[in-house]
View 1 (cartoon, rainbow, N blue to C red):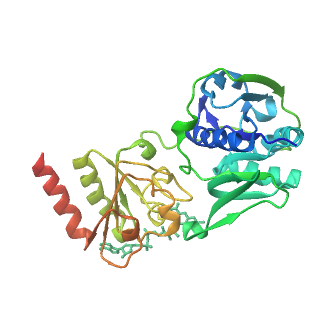
View 2 (cartoon, rainbow, N blue to C red):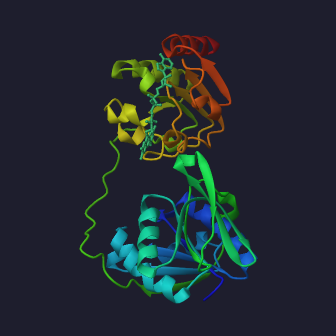
View 3 (tube, rainbow, N blue to C red):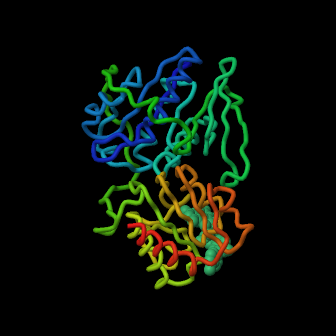
Amino acid sequence: MSNDIFVLIEHRDGKVSENAYELLGKARSLAAAAGGSVTALVLGQGVGNMASSLGAANKVLAVEGDSVAQFTPTGYVNALTPIVETGNPLLTLVPNTAVGIDVAAGLSAALKLPLASYAIGIEIADGLPSIVCQTLGGKINTEVGFTVGRGIVAVNGGAFAADDGRIEGQPLVETLSASGDAAGVVFKRFIEPESGDVDITKEDILISVGRGIEEKDNIELAEELAEAMGGAVCASRPVVDAGWLPKSRQVGKSGQTVKPKLYVAVGISGAPEHLEGMRDAELVIAINSDASAPIFGAAHYGVVGDLFDILPALTEKIGEAG
Ligand SMILES: Cc1cc2nc3c(=O)[nH]c(=O)nc-3n(C[C@H](O)[C@H](O)[C@H](O)COP(=O)(O)OP(=O)(O)OC[C@H]3O[C@@H](n4cnc5c(N)ncnc54)[C@H](O)[C@@H]3O)c2cc1C
């Protein structure tokens, strides 16, 4: 049994993901409070090379092998189970992403360790972890602890500052061969987003359309405004489900998480599943004909009105301003 904090590092194309820095930064303060150290778990091939960008960790465990060369839930869980069992850390932090949530659930079942997911806060008090989790898509939060005093936590993106974990350094690197196999799952290929499509997670200005846009042809109104402002168009789920925009443009729980400087929500009601993907935008402007729409609760500025009047008028004004 140790007071260490383990962190699962997500990475793609040899680059550490932003969420890994968020987890590492928090892990440092938790380890300091618990009197333990931070171990970064990196699975893949040649992953020890990433150690220099994981200076926030005291130690990097590079777990290499065919079964973890690409992510599969079973490959990762089978490789991580003996490592977490032997290290017996106070907490194993994983990102609450498509990868992390599978690993968290699998590890929890394999090791009979409790799991807290959708975490947005973690503290150690008297040596025991206390975790704040989002419930019902963020409508209410819960504070939980672990009866066995230790467990696994799946942490929401954006819950902690990435800058606290973005430390260059030379942590101790230990390389291990991945144990187990992928239990019958074979990675075949990545399916990239349609070529030429924009990456909405990297845009500073997003004009986001919801069901209020009514039909595919009307999306042109949002595209004109986006062009005038130098931004891109994204959408709520019903617009994507209807096939009016590609999946890569969906914002929310089952889509992308975006943090633009400006997010204009047009004809979007503001369901918790949508807010989950855009609540960290620096400035939110909502345009909705229903003054009681929940999106106004998440917006810095709101316009109650008909989007079919407001969008063309805005585009014209911005065009005039040059
Ligand atoms: C597991 C799960 C995952 C989900 N994931 C996502 C997700 O990733 N992203 C997501 O967005 N949703 C997601 N949802 C769906 C979510 O619950 C909502 O159903 C969805 O966000 C609603 O989209 P909307 O706001 O565009 O549509 P609606 O809720 O129908 O809202 C349309 C809005 O347009 C306004 N409006 C209508 N006409 C006009 C007009 N002329 N001018 C101005 N305003 C107008 C209306 O007042 C209304 O507020 C998920 C749901 C589940 C259960």
